[in-house]
Image (tube, rainbow, N blue to C red):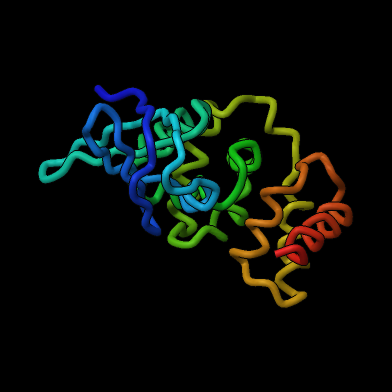
Length: 187
């Protein structure tokens, strides 16, 4: 139905934006990570997903097409709705999430608020083949170790995850921690 929207941000809240295009304002739900990067009165283009419910039509927006594809895979898992999928997308990069799913790393997925062991298992079972075989040989232990190290230094899980999302996934654990500390120190 509505595949993309290009327009001007006229209103911004903690959970959504209103983008005006052609004289119509569209309420677009986006991830907190994306929301923090956008400013009111700026021009923007989103790939969108229209979620139809009995009592509402909700629009979800993504800056990159890959985010939209991954979001749509997540909402096709039973028990994961659009808001839960946005939460999942907000905690790590798509590559890191694909690695967690491809390697069957339940412990990484259960660190997400609202995702229990059964839901994490369901995500892994239903999406493992879809995320690609290239992610099966990669371990997320370095990412988990860096997260735990930052938490032990007094940073919240949210702060630590936000910083680690900005760090290159190719770095070793110690380098990830150093880079994340630089990012956290500059805020």
